[in-house]
Length: 139
Image 1 (cartoon, helix red, strand yellow):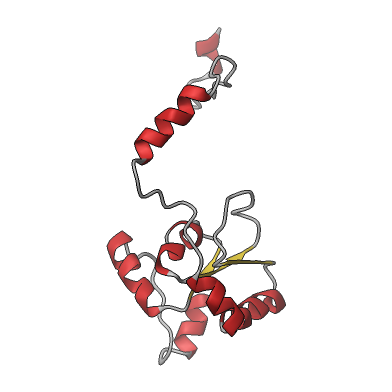
Image 2: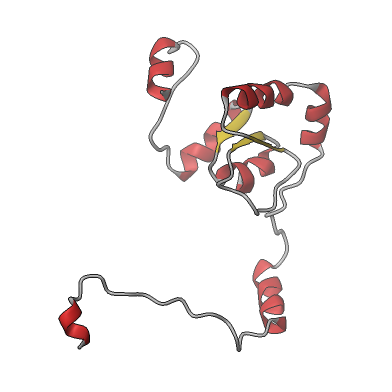
């Protein structure tokens, strides 16, 4: 669907499978919003004061900056969210938003402090299974 749109609108759109981190972050200066269900809209875009339209529930439960608009994966809701990012009220919210994942001072120290307070005695251990091993090897 994206490639089809770009083919019909090549004068105003382009699609990439992947830009890599440096090109992607550099490209953010040219966009009005990050649209999709990628974590980038929650993690990187808010630092650049760029709106995010978060489609669907893939990022459900994660903290989100005020620059993030959640919407259902329907044409109607996506268009409504796109319209919203161009409203003056949202622009003010966007400029005053903060990246909630950005830790400027000593993030490692903060992590260690939190880990010291957590009781790890009853932590669940994730089990892994070697699917290449046959059943006979377990007997």
